[in-house]
Image 1 (cartoon, rainbow, N blue to C red):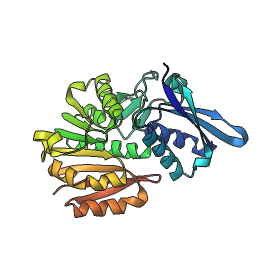
Image 2 (image 1 turned 90 degrees about the horizontal axis):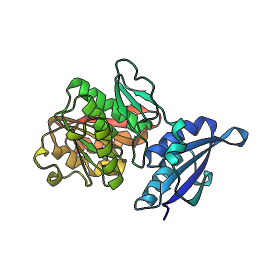
Image 3 (image 1 turned 45 degrees about the vertical axis):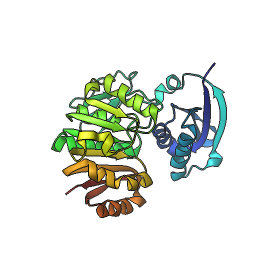
Image 4 (image 1 turned 120 degrees about the horizontal axis):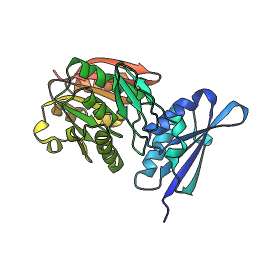
Length: 292
């Protein structure tokens, strides 16, 4: 029996097409196909597998699009059977530079890696995280900064999605990464991404949340945490993040709108952190903190 999919057809104006496509990739869509519509509009077509977690992914897509002014009235839904959506959208996803040192490319983009950059090969799939969304971009910049200062001995990628943050850290010199995500697809893709990029033996991906039991002897000894999630989830994780980090350990908190950065900074100050600063790309922000 063929797998069932939910097809989303989204109408956007030309200036929003690229950003909207990136957000859908990051929200867990399988791929995004872009077509020119009438009157200067663009049509974006993407698909979500009809399986556990499908509703959550759909709501995430809707929320991310709503944040840029694309309402539900611009989205048409229909059920269809299996096709190779990633193959259909390959022209939309190509290699891109992030920060000063990283080059992220899909397997089909065989252009030479720019001089001085480290290559990370990532095939867009069902998990969150291709690097193109501003929240992931902000987290990647923080990962590069941390690894340039001192590559962490022990890093946690919290809400790992595709695993791009942890794998980037390992390529930058981090010794070991433990990744957490409640989505089984994210755990599988993180493991696959690490193996594809030659760092599988230094990556552990777990289908749970951050707890002392899950971290075992890493608890209180983690050097760096990258958490690219949501504001409400980050609030709830303030205490576990504090417990997991060693004294002097740092964390980047991303996945939040810029209007929520001050609120999140206060939450983490109350949890015992020192706020090092905030960064912003478009309407998205990250907060960087350190445990005294």
